[in-house]
Image (tube, rainbow, N blue to C red; front, side):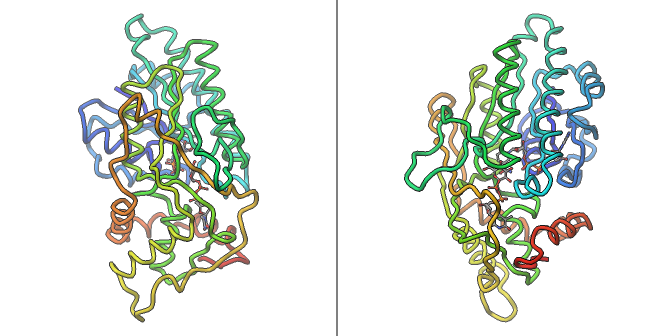
Length: 357
Ligand code: NAD
Ligand code: DAU
C-alpha cells in the first residue's frame, strides 16, 4: 500500500480518488483536517476498505512511525502543506511549522522506517514530495519558462517554506540515500478546489452576486493545469521517476489572471445566465495588489515528457468547462465549506478592497 499525506485537501483528495479508481492498491491517508482538509471530498470512498483515513499531523513522529510500522507502505507521498499564498502573508508561522518542520519530521520518521526495511523493500521504496513552481520565483515577460535547473528564488512566505522543504528532501537523498522524488507543479484547478483560490473564488462569488476581486492590474501570468493531469503526472513519477530527480509539471497554458476571470464569467453566462441578462463580468472589481506579488510563472515540462512520456490530457478549454460545471453541480459542497472560519478569512483578506463577502 501507499501512504498519502494531505489526502483530504484539493489535490490530495483528487489523487486518492483517482488512485483507488485505477487500481486495487490500498491507501493510508494521513491528514490533519485543517480548514483546507475536508472528509467530504472523499465521500465517494466511504466504506471502501482500501482507504484508511487517519486524522493527524505529519509532524507527529509517534503517529507517523506507528502508521508506517502498522501498514508498511511501499511509498509515502507528501501532499500535506499550508498552501495559500495570501494566508502565508497574514500568518507565516503555520507555513513554517507544517511545510518546513512537518516535512523534516516526516522525513526523519520515514528514514527510520526505510533504514529497517529488508533489502528488496528498501530498494523499491519511494518518498515523493509534491512541490510547486513558486520556488523558482518570478519571470519577466520574455524569460524562458522554468526548467528543473532554474535557481530557487522564492518570494512569499509560502514559497520560501516550500523551497525549504524541497531542500530538506534533496538533502535526505544526498546524505542518507533516502529514495526521493520531487515534483514542482504549476497552478492546479478542478473539483474540490477550496474557494479561497482564484478560480473557485470567482465562480462562487459570481453566483452569489458578489464582487470578483482582481489583484492589481490582473495581468499576472500563471500556468494552469487540470488537477487530474497533475495526479497522473505524480503517478507516472512514482512509477518511473529517477531517484533524487525533480520533475516540473505544467499545462503549457500561460494566461493572465484577468483572462481567466473573464473566461469563468463567459462560461457562467452560458451555463447559468444572470436573471437580469447582464454578464457576470460586470462584477469584476480591481482591488489592492498582493504584497510581493509574483508577476509570471511558466513551466517547461519537457523533462517529464521526454523521460517519462507524460503530457496533460486536458486542454484549458475542456478543463475549465468541467470545473465550472462541477461547481454548478455541487452547491451543497460550496455551502458547507463556507463555514464561519471561511467567512472570517474572506472578511480579513478583502476588507477595504472589493468587500468580497
Ligand atoms: P490544500 O490546502 O487544498 O490541502 C492541504 C491538505 O493538507 C489539507 O487537507 C490539510 O488538512 C492538510 N494538512 C495541512 N497541514 C497538515 C499537517 N501538518 N499534517 C497533515 N495534514 C496537513 O492544498 P492543495 O492545493 O491540495 O496542495 C497540495 C500540495 O500540492 C501542497 O504541498 C502544495 O504546496 C502543492 N501544490 C499545490 C498547487 C495548487 O495549485 N494548488 C500547485 C503545485 C503544488
Ligand atoms: O503555482 C502553484 C501555486 O499556485 C501553488 O503552489 C499554490 O499552493 C496555489 O495556491 C497557487 O498559488 P497562486 O498564488 O498562484 O494561486 P491563487 O489562486 O491564490 O492566485 C492565482 C492568481 O490570482 C495570483 O496571481 C493572485 C490572483 N488573485 C488571487 C485571488 C485569491 C486575484 O487576483 N484575486 C484573488 O482574490
